[in-house]
Image (cartoon, rainbow, N blue to C red; front, side, top):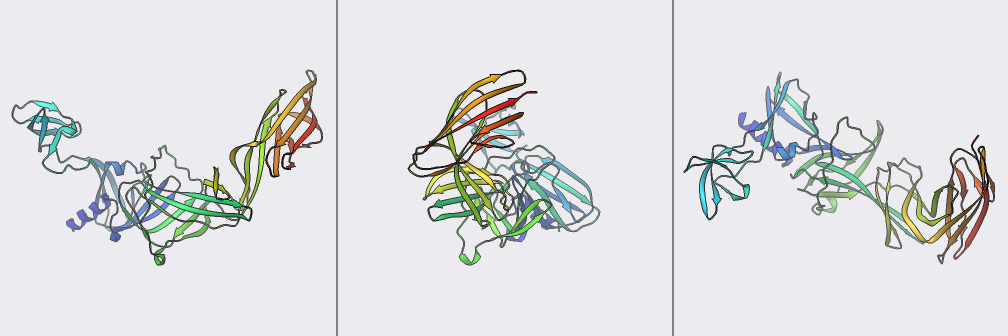
Length: 411
């Protein structure tokens, strides 16, 4: 029994490496819950390398399904202490004994004197163990249990490709699952979650490892993401088959396939003040999906060429969002302002707005002049609760001018 316990503990410490002890994963944006079925006695221990333990969110390591009386953790003393090593001093090797492993305090076996050594100058006679932490559970009785913890070592994120042409557009979604635990992990069952998850503690996401593509799969074994709908404000997606996350690897598979609607336009938003101003309009797309889309990066191409990237928030089905790809050098605005009168109670301004399209094709344009407080607008523009709005379709090479009066009321 003791040998089996040691064997099981070692498998945990090595990162769930075998199919017999594969994990179930619930992967949220930025962190994951790892769950594994374990057989325990009245005592259960596992040892984790400190690097792997450091990725576990504090307080999340638990045993479920059994009555836990106490749970303690302690750093495992390094097995090097008391052992003999060889240390380079100039051109000779000196025999020494490791007194303290954490700061490499050594004792010269010939002189009996103590000294500190550079790790690069030490030759080991046995393979050094990794610093580790042991967690011990004392249980009222043994049985089947679930080992569960939250880790930053595994995360997922969606990414999207939007391709536009004269014939319409296509939209593709991909799910990237990243393994930064430093261990190879075999996964039995996987759930991906989209939405906003708040954890009531501070933690800092670790930088992502350089992507390493998972091994090629046979078509018959190809994995599939299956949408399971919404629960508690989160959207769940199940993977259809087990898979393996390689060390430092990224496992990528096709994600959702919604129907999407895309409308391109150019736009500028200005906040009114009584001075002349000019600038360029930005390249924009109105985007709508028939399914919920978790927040992620959209890469946009027109006629096969990348025109930019944009972020979408967690996007509710059939709710419009706007993708901003940066300024368009060919479409500009110029706003000229003249003060007609000004007093303590109100100010009156005459405004001339010019929009110009230097492209050899027509564009749908939008310009907003935002105002604060109480105001009145008169002229050949649309007045909204926010200010001035014009939405012309500008033909190739067209320049269009609008004149309007703004009265700002202070009392």
